[in-house]
Image 1: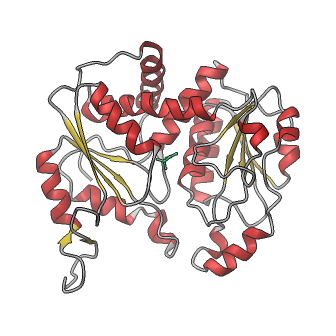
Image 2: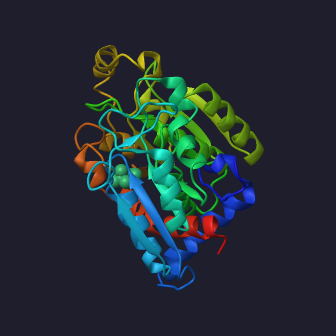
Amino acid sequence: MSDLRHLIDWHLLDDSVWERAIHGALRYRRDRKWRTTAAGRSIGMLFFNPSLRTRTSMELAAVQLGAHATTLTPGQGTWGFAWEKGLKMDGGEAEHIVEAVGVLSRYYDALGVRLFASHTDLQKDRDEVMLRTFIEASSVPVVNLESAFYHPCQALADAATIVDRLGETRGKRFVLTWAHHPKALPMAVPNSALLMASRLGMDVVVARPEGYDLDGGIMETAIGQAARAGGSVEVVSEQAAAIDGADIVYAKAWASMEVYDDPAAEAAKRHRHADWRVTAEHMRSTNDGAFMHCLPVRRGVVVDDAVLEGAQAIHLDQAEYRLHAQKAILDYVWNL
Ligand code: CP
């Protein structure tokens, strides 16, 4: 891969880059000024999946730095894209992603792409085959706006939110709790949250029902990061005990990797754990802990309304940090 400043996930970048990005997000939130540091630059974004926060925060971040942003929804006002190499394109797709990205990177100074997991081919998702195909076709930096396995934009906003609230993060209890959901959700957010909290030196507890382990390679990276930063990582299967004494409760649903390509089996398995929901009682047992969620959130399924409407919920601060974090990301990709 080229030496362009792509952002796939933070764990692939040096500590100095990660720390600078967190401090950038904190600084952008403090001063809230519009700037012209990125005047004359532009970012083009392709959202193959829906978004509220990522799309609007990146568009606004670019504008508030003096840059221009364009958002495209592939297939709606663009041509449909083919992805396979060596394909005879005599089907419905009019344009290959290689030409589309090649053209856009002649126009823009950075590209962004949202490409969720296939949920059909675990190895392909783990290897980020589609994101890497996109990046290989680009001659400008690419920002991952949520891929199969990573959501670095969310992770940076989460880190800044936690540092802002806790100050010193080392040794603080971060509970990443699985939650029930009517749909099989991707693992990008929990993977990036685990990598984020371990890198902050927190005592990370992943609470999940049996059969919902996160990817082994990502766990290994998180354990190594935590050891270097003075924290720890453990995995438990009892939600209430995990949340007891927590400084941060981070709720997220994700699909079981054990039945990744079998939606019916996955749904049956998931629905056996419908009681995995964060309640006000859980939050009372914390160390005056904060409730976080990346949003969108299913009220009454993932978390009770009383938690979202209570004093311990910081999910809107977390969402606000998306805007400040996107500016720090543009600073990184454009080396501002
Ligand atoms: N958390 C998050 O990425 O939100 P959107 O899917 O709305 O962008």
